[in-house]
Figure 1 (cartoon, helix red, strand yellow):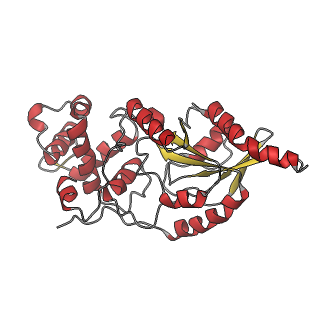
Figure 2 (cartoon, one colour; figure 1 turned 180 degrees about the vertical axis):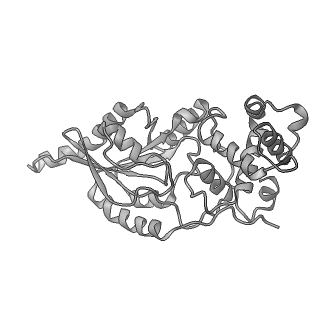
Figure 3 (cartoon, one colour; figure 1 turned 45 degrees about the horizontal axis):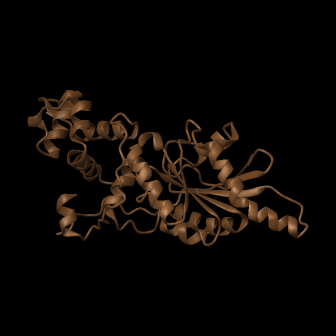
Length: 301
C-alpha cells in the first residue's frame, strides 16, 4: 500500500498568483526562470513553462554554492541540449550577475531592433523573475539593484505583490509571488521542496521528509553523515538508528535519557538547509520520477 502524501499544498494566494502571472507575462520581453540548483527538476514548475510560451527564456540555477558542482554541470548540459539558455548563479554573493545581464541584453536585442525599425522610441527592456517560493527571486533582484529594493525573507511565500525594480538605465525587473503547482503528485519532489524550504514547515510530514533525506545520503554519500555527526559504522545501519545517534550526540534528550526524535530531525534539516552537510544535489538528471502510488518507490522512500 502506498505511503500517505508528504504534502498537498496549494494555498489560495498561490492560485491567485498564477492568474496574476498570466497577465504580468504579457508585459515583459524576457522571462527569467529561477530554479534551485540542488533540485532543478523538483523546483521546476510546469505551469510556468506553459505561461512562458514563446518569450525569450533563461533558466537560472540559483544557490549553486550549495549544490554539487559536478551535478550542476550535468544539469547545465541537460538544459542546453533542450535549446534552453542556462546559467548557474549564487544570488546572495552576486556571482553570475554580470553574465545574466549580458544574456538578457543578447536575448532582448531582436526586440529592440524591431522597435527601432518601426521608429519606436526605445524603452527599458522588461523582464520577469519566475520561480517557486524561497528560491531566491527577491535576493537576486536586490543583488542586481545593489540595494534592498524588494522585501526578502527566508520563508516560503513571502513575496506577495507586484514589484517593478529599475536596474541601470535599460532594464526593469518584475518580482512576483512564488508559485507551486496545484498537485504535488511526485511525492519525492514534494519532500525535496520541503527540505529546501519551498514548502511551509507547517504543512508536511517532517518524519517522512527526513527519512528521505537520510536515505538519500546513506545511499549516495554516507561519508557526509559520518563526517558531520561522527557516526560509527554500527550506527549507520538504518534511518532510525542514525537519527537516534545524532540526537544523542547533539543532546536532544528528554527525561530518562530518551532521544527527542523530532528535535533531532529539525537539527538535521537545518544543517542541510544551511549547507553544513556540504554541497548536495538531490535531483539527478537521469532519475526516474517517483509517485505516491508507486509501491516500489514507497517501500524505498
